[in-house]
Image (tube, rainbow, N blue to C red; front, side, top):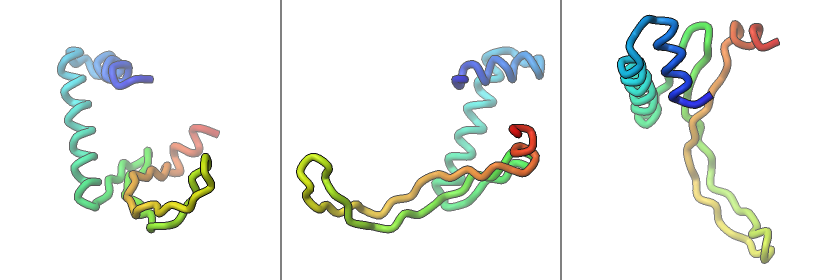
Length: 90
């Protein structure tokens, strides 16, 4: 499912115009992204929680040469499914 497919589904289920549904979806994604960029988390009851995970710096190997390389520390978005979503999937 793409973002456009999701927006079309929102439009059908809510009765909003397609452009309004796309704008609402874009706004929601932007708000979630802004919160995560600030180090916060977003919890959606019955769906799950978006949070930020920190990865420590580490050493790795270049698979082509076998040379040891340094991999910088980074942050990544993480999603934890709520129990209601897990039950629906199983």
